[in-house]
Image 1 (tube, rainbow, N blue to C red):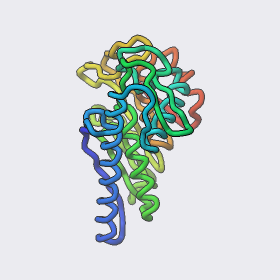
Image 2: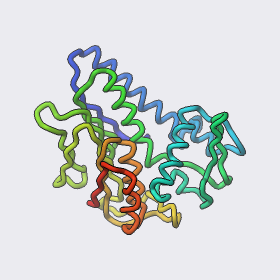
Image 3: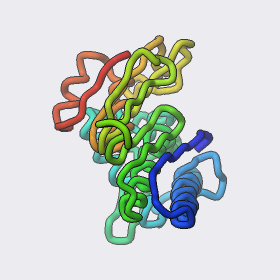
Image 4: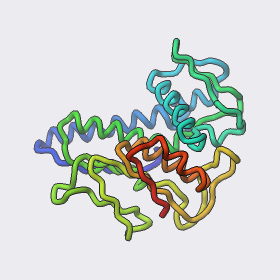
Length: 244
């Protein structure tokens, strides 16, 4: 995913902790090998080159179904096909009977940049829970963070955006995602409505239970105009956002 991942957790047994670290790395690499469009052999890359109905692995099929539901839930502003040449939506059709997927146009292609980190963090967080870890802070690229429990010497984990250290978010069994352009103002998030890169020096921070939903929402809210933000957040009870 071209990003640094850091997992800090407490565990009483060194050998057990090393096994957990190995398993966590495997989870992240599994997500990368599935969803990285820059890896020619990844199922997502193969789908980007496909014609007609093609069968995809079950985990990719699940991701694509979820992404289409999230596109609808965010008024179209979370869109994994936003960078495509085609503006036809839906950009793909899923067939449940055989888990096949068809792009609706040859100009459609998918990028999971606003999804994969949150998805990987949720997989790692689930792994740690199942392994008995009760306190942990998981960081992917300094923009997606998930917390298990609280800091061992406090009531929460205090997390500050690396570009705005004067701001702190209190995380306890919750997550944070930040999307934006930062100080440079150079854009990389596309407005699905216009097909243009969103510019400007600002960031959107979203907090809530799921690292994946936080990442989806921060991407959508950054791409959307201010007048659309309340409508996007209406169906996501317990999640909050802040422009910073």
